[in-house]
Image (cartoon, rainbow, N blue to C red; front, side, top):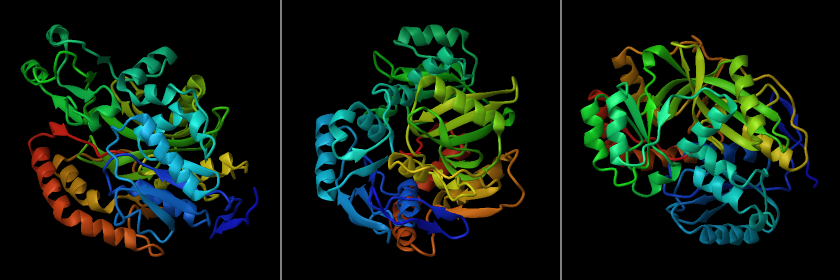
Length: 429
């Protein structure tokens, strides 16, 4: 496939193929998703025609100057797979040429993997074992894979009944954390609202009474923030599970505090963590973009894998190399048969999500928590929403966020002052 070479100022040529569009694929209602906007801008600035699935015509993604067309398709994420596949194929026929898929949530990543045969006639995407993304997105599946391959992860239990929870409670060490076992449960009737810290045996038994006959939860060892550090890895792995772009960073703040979406982060070189991630992904044979959350436990000196998102993370634009490569650009280049330019990551670069970092900052200051390894000064800052060459997504975010967002933030702030017991991270984290 042809196409001129696009340039990014200060980084030299990036041999992008402008004949191959990109499509942001998202299922469910979360219109204020900065990751999708970031991907549209990242490839759009190189001249790649960009398309996106949106909830309506007035989402931040839909108004980006770099978006060729928004396909308005409100979904819940609970539709039958055949319906979603047919919807994607209709969009592919409308675009009219092979298109790189960029999923922003687990539902999209799993659907693409499990229906590779049907989707391959219209789209380009990394080929992977059809069952692997669903297993990685599952807390239980990920825990089992970590145990199988010798990757540290927090101690966990997967009770199948209330009686098992009662027996577990007799020997458990509190506090502990409860999470939904499957990522998809957030679309249906989740047992818990995101990450739930449980302080006592009585509290566990009280909550468990509402979890039904077969509790869909994972009960996990709690890693206290005073003894832990939050790290993230974003990478793109090719068809041979070799890293074509791999970045490490430290999460400074999240919202809700200590349990939600990244609000502020830095690139920090961590060769040990990079090696751990590359080794694990080679062992499991994954191909594509990954977003990993790990917590360094100072008590035993181990990096423990908490979450494996088999798709682009919302904060992926934190990470860029000296050659101007991020994970989305690396994927597009690789899938179109182009080489991925090499370059060191831009250490010290900072990422801020404007609409959630201020409340996160206030909450973290109140708790007295500071993040180790965060540089005193940023070498450069990437804002999630505000961009001088593409201002409308920021303005649209403000218009949609201010009124309902203020009510939501007030609710979360009251929760955080009570100890952050129940928090629901946004979808597409």
